Image 1 (spheres, protein in one colour):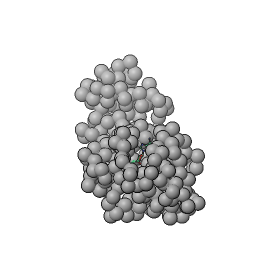
Image 2: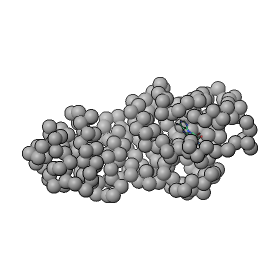
Image 3: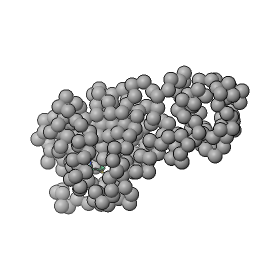
Length: 255
Ligand code: SAM
C-alpha cells in the first residue's frame, strides 16, 4: 500500500501531525543528543521518526498498525540506528536503560500507557507525550483544584510532569475534536514521598478519590482509623482534594 491509498483508523487514534512548526517545536523540546536511545511510540507515517533518527544514537519505533509499519520499513528502513517494531506498545517492555520516550500517542490509550511506562521507570530518563489537553491538566493538577485526582497523585509520585506547550487541533489530520498538550515527565529516581508500603499508599489514594465529595473519615474507614488520622495532624473531616502527596504519605505511614 502506498501513502495515497492509506485511510486512517479511528480505533488506533490516527491523527497525523501535519504542522511543520509544531514538529520543530516537539523535536527541540525533546533535546535528543547523539548519545541517547529513544523509544518512539506510534511513529505513524514517520513525521517525528525521520528527525529522531538523525539525532539519536538509536531509535526503537513501536507501531501497532501493520500498514504503517510496512510503509515505515520502506521509507526509513535504510537507517541502521532505527529498529521498527510492529507491536502494541502496551505489551512492549523497554530493555535499554536511560531511554528517552517520545510519542504523539493515540488518545484512547493515554492513561494505561502512562501507567505502563511509569511501571518501567527504572529504564527511562524522561517521557515526552502529546496528550489531550484535559488529561494533561489532570496530570499536573495541584491540591484544591477540580482537576486534582488519584491519577495526578500517581503520576506526580513517580515523575515531575510539566505542560511544555499547547497544540491546536488543526495541527493534525484528520483533525481531532480537542486540543492537545505536549507534556514532559521527568522521572523521579526516588518517589515524591517516602512510604512504607506503596500498594497501601495508592489504595488509600484511590479509596479517598473514589468518593471525592466525602470526608476522609468516611472513605478511609477500614483502612486508617479515625484516631490514626488525628495523630497525623490531618483533620478527619477533610476531603481528598485538600490533601497533598505528603499528606497521603503521612496517612499511609500512620497505620
Ligand atoms: N507519530 C505520528 C505523527 O505524529 O503523525 C502518528 C501519531 S497518531 C496520533 C498515533 C499513532 O499510534 C498511529 O500511528 C497509530 O497507528 C499508533 N498506535 C495506536 N495504538 C497503538 C498501540 N497500542 N501501540 C503502538 N502504536 C499504536
